[in-house]
Amino acid sequence: MVMVNIKRDYFLVTIIGFLVGLLVLIPAFNLGLKITIPIVLISVVGFSLFAPLAFTILNFLSRWVPVFRQFGKFAAAGTLNALIDLSILNLLIFVSGFASGVFYALFKSISFLLATTNSYLWNKFWTFESRLPVSGKEYIKFALFTLVGVIINVSVATSFVTFLGDGSKLAANIGALIGIFVALTWNFLSYRNVVFKTKEALEISN
Image (cartoon, rainbow, N blue to C red; front, top):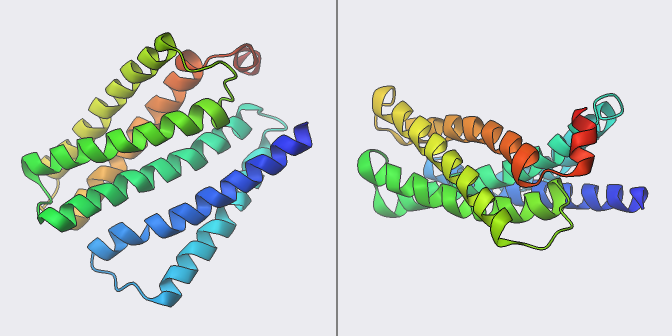
């Protein structure tokens, strides 16, 4: 059973790497990078190879710190969520031409909320391996903690763009990345310790 789970994990991590390799091209294009076939191949193949390699390292370290394997899955899913976030954000910026102000905050909210929906599915059924069916209580807890994550993400990103940015697309993406990192930390701790808390998680924590 353990071997089956490991094989499944490596398969899913590789799929995530492939998707990240594709999605990262959207913000790159919006920032002015000329997307060519070689660049597409380098991005897709590179991330498809890097993802399982990074997971292997964390899986190895989990021999001493068990939570590393779980964090490895969370990080993989989180990277995919981040690229969904950035891709949608950049698509909205590209279509509208707005990269700051009220529209930026609106676009950032939309992109983060859509990425969060993806996050719920990956984290419930893969990262934290919840065997319980979706329930109203669990969903409400997830929604509440995610809402805090949305506020943290949008506030941090918008504050950076407003006070430290120069209104450029680059500043918009830097702000988004900072917001994603802060919210990612919050999400892992709240999902693991509250939303999807299990007996196994308690044993690992102790």
